[in-house]
Length: 80
Image (tube, rainbow, N blue to C red):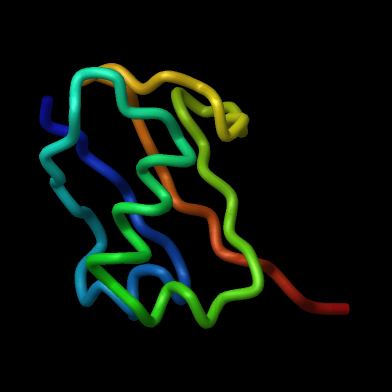
């Protein structure tokens, strides 16, 4: 299946574009997606963490993705 992923902040800078389209297995989980992204873009390993949102809600690692899900990578935020 094809997954479209919106990228923000440092994740957008690492990948080099604001949106990414990936081919994934039919039973891809959020954890599997993170592993796939870290393998394809090793600089993501330098981030201490980032969240994955699916259909406007933060998703657990075991959430099973579907082809038409709205997926976004949310980088760590700092400030004061």
